[in-house]
Image (cartoon, rainbow, N blue to C red):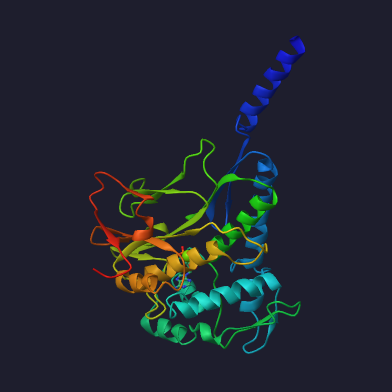
Length: 359
Ligand code: AMP
Ligand code: MG
């Protein structure tokens, strides 16, 4: 009996030190891809899944970062114009997905926006408003159709850029990381988990008590406030907002989501976009899935603005739902989220529904 009590005491002490709960909870918080990330998983396999997640995000950052000189993206960007650069199948696959999202959004999402993002100082944190001639010169090379991705399913995958071009996967890499986290949780047999990769949320199964996960949609104008809460299980929810990264100069705010048509931070009348899609179970690990799609579309819809985003959603070409927050104080929710989105009382916003047929 004494031995049993001692064992229980030791277990309780161990759990209070490591953070494990009776539900078999395991969690970690870490900084990667320029943002804070956390992951919490429950049950068998949770512990190994959580530690593998951290290692996986580090691996992806080393592969895809534009600011690390030894990444594959840096190798592509420092290659000579019109000369193919050898890359891994994984990088080629992600660039290929990014290319098709650039294409399908008519260039609102454009992976060749890199030189313009740099000109504003968002890669170095040395912010500045570029001159119009400087922007015009850089915009000449912003054109995703100039990116050639070849041999994506072979060991001789390669990427070719045109003169003056560079690629930036900042608008899609965290979403891709959430797809890879989904695969890790699958491989470890984890049935309940939540991962937050800086605005990119993935929820697996339900909470341990069987209820849906609650994902807050932040109020872009009120730090710490929400415009509403989404009740989700097995889903990705990705938010892009001008409030997430910006600088101020001469009383004006300049954020990090650039309109490829102007080279300026997008002024589409939206202050945030949240895209929600099924938390698909990836059949082939390390290939882009719905997490990647949500990330590309959150950036793209932000650039497109309310009307074009609604039109794109209505086309039904992709299976996703969205929450748009407008500058003039409205929250627009697509009808597929009707039973999942809870309005925030007293937020001051007016709530509207976007339906398949325009009203
Ligand atoms: P997100 O936070 O996912 O909306 O992505 C914003 C990041 O994507 C920026 O920090 C840039 O690195 C990059 N980016 C900015 N504008 C665009 C754009 N129009 N298309 C693709 N990537 C972009
Ligand atoms: Mg994005």
